[in-house]
Image 1 (tube, rainbow, N blue to C red):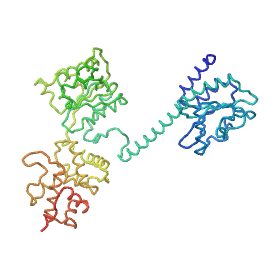
Image 2 (image 1 turned 45 degrees about the vertical axis):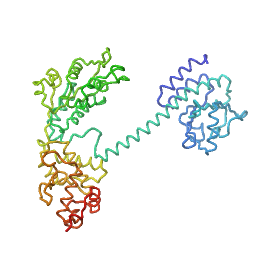
Image 3 (image 1 turned 60 degrees about the vertical axis):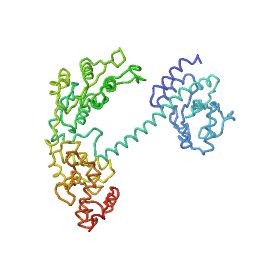
Image 4 (image 1 turned 180 degrees about the horizontal axis):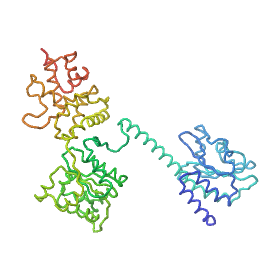
Length: 517
């Protein structure tokens, strides 16, 4: 083995560094040409799924004529003989005058006449291929040649295994790409990035500020009412920045208990406190090289504000229970719907932290101030609802848009999305029931049941969807006197298939007979 050490180092280097196995085999054949009577040198991969051998790499002067076929197919019985021989990890030394009688005949199928060596590329009983060396005409294979051939098996096993894994990864990648294209087609999207609806209309000024600040690494503060889309804008800042390939981590500061804020944001070491059974990487470390979006920054505890200020200033943090500082490279984007200036005057938010975070504020207008975006938003949410609920796409009508535009949307874009979801469910694939989803008909018509309303009596709290749907169906049944089918029937008024309406009536426990004369 020692006399082959130098060349083996070179062979291992070629086997491991080359992604293309054909190139690896060619380079190795050049290294071996001075030490072996090598005329042909090739690898055949075992394909157990199809019971066959397939040539995947080949080097030699006349490689096209080396094998009678690039693929050799076997019966299940013959293929099992091949595998059984392979697991014995023996080397076959073959010549026409002295054939190897111990090897199965199936091993020599499609192999031309001549002198050659065959060795299994296997490890721990797992055989993935065969290595062939064909000697030149008139050449003799000695014990030295056989010894060198034997030590070639391990590095070429690694090369073939790497090639197999690479091919599997390529197949998985192609499948993932196909699934991605299919998904984007169904979503009618050109890419996976979040769609900013209204970027060229109601949010035009906002997007101009986003494109301006995305180029730098300064902290950004997004201000606006709840539901205006602050996370969507923060993701757009990240997507347009130089950190787009890095992680984007969203943290809702209001959802983290005050006693856990330090651990969640900055991490902790094992044993730092009761229950810390292992080390924990905080959100800042997870966002290293990317963007950390701190939503509801006004909910951050006083202690958390102090720690955050230090990280923004110098980029260093310390895990709880650790004395070794850790440097992080994170872009900070924060958002709030609260009046931080008022909180500062009341002592609820640090003034120095405000100055650090509000370097570049972006204000998101509420939906009531950009109603020209409602048609595009309604269509966007209708497409998402159709996909999510498995319904046929139903686009909002002009009347739907009129009703939506007359509402003030205290919950902003988030509330609009919920209303369209509700309208799609009520429509059940037969159209968007926007009036019912808004509770519009309950305000516009008076029925025998005076307490019908989308609001809980005496409050401004919206009723659950099932309660509202049940009340609305009962109102319509009262008006139609229990009639379901026909032009004046409840199904026609609700724009539902009569059988669909009957199913809803049964599910909601409504007794339609009570409304008949």
